[in-house]
Image 1 (cartoon, rainbow, N blue to C red):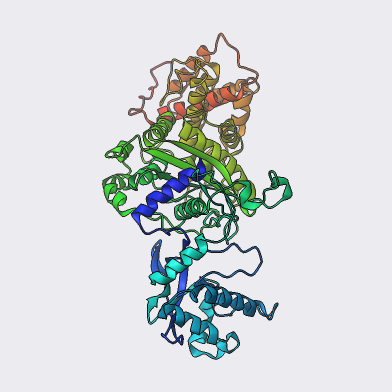
Image 2 (image 1 turned 45 degrees about the vertical axis):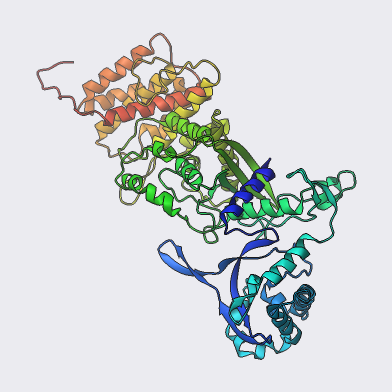
Amino acid sequence: MILQSLYNYYQILLHEGGIAAPGYTNELVSHAINLSTQGELLDIIPLYVPVQMGKKTVERPRRMNIPARVKRSGNIAANFLSDNAAYVLGLSDKDAKDPDYAQKRFEDFRKLNIEILSQVDSPIARAVIAFLLNYDPIEAMNNPIISRHLDELLQGRNLIFQVEGENVLDDPKIRKTWEQYVLGQEAIEMQCLVTGGIEPIERLHPDIKGVPGAQTKGASLVSFNLDAFKSYGREQGVNAPISRRAASGYTTALNYLLSDQNPNRKIFLGDTTIVYWADSEDKRYASAFYSFLNPDFLEEETNDLDQLPKRIHDKNAEQEMSEEAKKIEQVKPVDLSYLRNGLDESTRFYVLGLAPNAARLAIRYFMTESFGVFAERIMQHYDDMKIEKEFPNQPTYLSPYRILAECVSPKVNRRDEEVKASWSLLGGALMRSILTGSPYPEGLYTAMINRIRHDSDEMSDQGHKRNVKINYIRAAYIKAHLLRKFRYQGSNPYQEVLQMSLNDSFSHPAYVLGRLFAVLEKAQLEAQGGKLNATIKDRYFTTACASPASVFPILLRLSQHHIEKAEYGYVLDRQIQELVDMLAAKPFPAHLSLDEQGLFILGYYHQKVAFYNKKELPVPLDDNQVL
């Protein structure tokens, strides 16, 4: 299903143009070796292009369609008309360890290319043959043209040939001969699992590049290299028969999705790289999908920020989103429904999560539905996450990245292997739940509760809160998690309280105790004028949340001292009494379950937000008034 979907997308890309045809691949090329018609070296031409990286413009090798690459596993294997300097020019910085390192590779390159080009009746082919026959790698260092570009050539990037400034690969006779050579090589014919036809089977599938953490040369999606993996004595690609045509197609499509050619940005969660596409030439489907999952255009962390390109914008989509972008800058709510306008919601859409696994790629998940179904499920996620904000400038829509970030201590480096492994598991499960509409993962809920237990409110040097124990995002996720969990169980005992804001009539002990803790904390803060090294939340919240009976009697006794000093102590005393009365028939529970701890946190958050969202303060009592 995955390979077939990718192969179908390859057909769409091929129809659009600009993607490599069968027998070719799209790779980075740094230099062109310009020859005369007699095969003499005229110049080495840099092919760098300016690329915008944030605020800087840097030079990067140019992407070009070149002949398909061979698979190298430490052995010597040359490519046709394009390769690195060790093969094309016999130049390498590894000769110190192996004096014949570059010489052996050049000889293999020369042999292969002369073998193929000798079948072409073309002056361009004869020029390249003449160069390969006359070129001597030993004398190359004395050539001023080569020495001028030596440092760049030794970086291992691809080189191509030109004759009098014309790309050799543009010669139709050379292309035809190459295609006959690469597609006509002897191979076993079997029924292809992708196309269903009887075709030559690809023994070694092309490499997939662009997944952080995988080998830099690329990794395989389909491969077998041990006897234990063989079926009925079949080896390598014959074990899972995919035709050359289909193998070239699906790998080309996946490499395109993972490359900077793709105008739609990849999504990174831990070590998982997420790509997505639609059965349509219209790029707005993918652009809209990304915007649904990242409505505030977050810059997600990746495993290697230096190696990966920054966000690449779809110009058409950016123009359509300009008004919405202005709303984001002005901290106004964004209406995501406009993204669906003009799109056929029945169009098939695909989401694929890939992770590195030695020389292979692991499939974290693969999901396919109509675009409209995915859009509805993502919007349901945002609807479930809705909760009253602490501050007006907080985002309305909470992306998966924001949620996962709340499960990591601010004191921990998010690049640590342990953190990335955790994010990979939790991120994959969270993404699946969002895109399938299923309950959120219990592991993520537990991780969120644990962070609340262990974190504390910390202040930055400027006096602003740097880390908050219970914040908008954590409360929103707890509310959404419980809402989804019980929605799929048929009945929800907490339905009345799993809403956006405070429900002061809901009498479940866990929720009421959370509210009561917020009132007791407010009494302390008002009594001390906010100048405290540690509040009751810092000292008692974790215990109060898990074992209320052991803490609340102590907190209620302390509150009487705080109420006496607070300016509006009589109001807080009345609130405390009302909440205690709601618990009168039920003594403080000895323990709260994990779900009830979520209710406790939600009650605390709702009550805190209700305090700060009041428009009017009560009038203080004068000396003649009594309580």
